[in-house]
Length: 264
Length: 84
Ligand SMILES: Nc1ncnc2c1ncn2[C@@H]1O[C@H](COP(=O)(O)OP(=O)(O)O)[C@@H](O)[C@H]1O
Ligand SMILES: [Mg+2]
Image 1 (cartoon, each protein chain N blue to C red):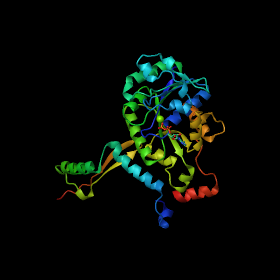
Image 2: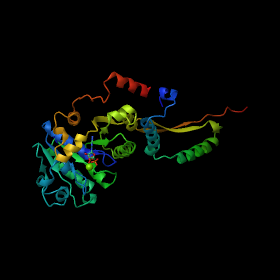
Image 3: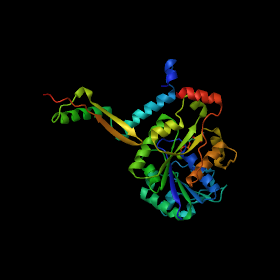
């Protein structure tokens, strides 16, 4: 069966697309799937850094498109998981080096060899975004619970719907439970109500994401981390398993009482 | 703003403010509308309808609502009773 191409995008930059791509790729490979993560952020590549593969790059996406190498020569094998591969972006070129059509061709060429092709999109709504969604069978939109990120996510969802790309699913990243409790952060329900799309997962704010990114070993590899678990749960939902959402709700009766008083 | 907050004269939380601001701005953004376009629409609808029927201009309510991701323009136009 040919693989599924999933594009991870957002609108606003810095909300966690690259982190999500690296960790979902890792989590899917942990489940035994053949996975390739594609860095479509040409000129600003960093998926290789997040995965700790920056020293293994020989060729990149633009080399493939311009015929300087074969597709398989450009694929970098992950250092932790043999089922995971990276197709790096070029660092010295810009988004116009690849067209949406060429990107769709690359996705088509990868599909027969992998179960999942995850495409890490650049921020914005311009050509880099158009490239990233060109081959997508489904799309994950990442947002944080902040006004500008949610606003830009809505714009992206509108563009995806207009381009008839989908199904679209949402990852809500960097939720801070203490801020939600104080009434100083949009809740999961708020964001879902505003954006009116399906949720596929919630990732808490976790400084261990920065620590693991520093080391180039994605947090999804950490079996004890609740954040790693959140990514692994999303991977299972992606392949069709019913995995209940871990409720980000305070379990103590006091917290419940305060939550109740604020929402009444 | 919650009932208890109002009772205690508290400010709405930043979460509530954020939610309301987003909901409002997205209603206009999604349909590419602005309050100004809505005003023009109202005037022109009144002009067209008035050519055929008697309407109650002050009672007109033209608003934009959301159902899921679908934006709807809802017009409520009271008619004047026919004069003898
Ligand atoms: N859940 C999280 N908790 C803490 N830091 C995070 C989280 N998600 C992302 N980050 C950090 O935010 C920054 C931006 O993330 P990144 O994945 O590069 O975003 P994007 O690709 O959308 O620009 C990075 O420094 C990353 O480590
Ligand atoms: Mg990125």
